[in-house]
Length: 153
Image 1: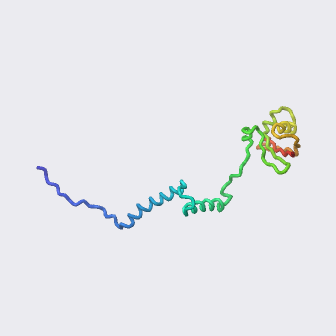
Image 2: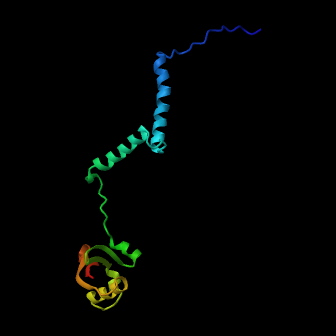
């Protein structure tokens, strides 16, 4: 016969303070639920939670320093290919400012730049108009990348 084995009571680890173990399992799921509802915006409109989220967003918009964001748009002349080489930059009253890609101006051959710009703008701007100024946009090594043209209508 096999030798007998002595059975002992199994030892259980004591959880310690029952209040802390019960609050942790309840606390973290609540925090996760609040975060989930805030991220997916599932609070009803007009509830205090909705108002808090809106206030946080408005505070972020108005209290964030502008220097944190360097998102001023920079027009790169390589982008002009997608818009036929002519981009309207601004206009005030009777003055309109355009930027033209130098490759588009050069594509007209041996035509002087002022005349080439006028021919190109005839396709885009309804006559009558007068070109007030043409300023070259220079890149590194004084390479002409394009032209800034002021037009009076």
